[in-house]
Image (cartoon, rainbow, N blue to C red; front, side, top):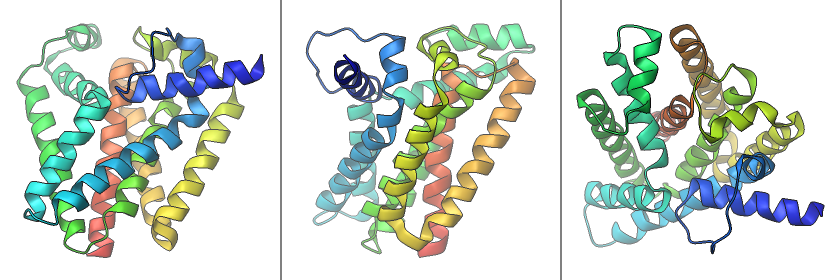
Length: 247
């Protein structure tokens, strides 16, 4: 039974974080909670595929174009999961109070704030990848960025949940799942970038702490959208830190 539940957890992690076809099985919030320890592995696989697209296309295209193609591949393989959260979180700043901000976040349309946030996110990420490509050192950094970004669910286990959706099940997650995810992420990041791990990890802790604190004060807790936005912020923070230290 436990092996079956673990298998469903792993499959739900892939199904949630990517758009890879996994048959017709339906996964619920309980499966997703069981899959939390696998989030870093899925994040690392996505990051590796993005980096390989950048490296491959960078052999015959300028680095910046190759970087944009790589970011496009990431958006395709993930279905823009975190971009949606980033856009909704940005649009919510058009609301004057907590209730209105939450209403805006539930609206599926994307406004001007959300559009600007996505453009900036994609542009800065592509520029960072291009800078790393010029050093032929993009695989490890991008794997580290997406692996650490996959831990953005952690605030959902620690803070009140202000929205609906699958994320509300995070409150039922057992601490052992979070410990396992953090341990696996630490191993992957250590292998990916070695001694350069300390700076990015410290930046990630600072970014997540500040973002979670801000969301708690502004919204009364976190939502699926703010968790997704946090994942994008973490990826950007890691990439920019590595660009600053490696180039």
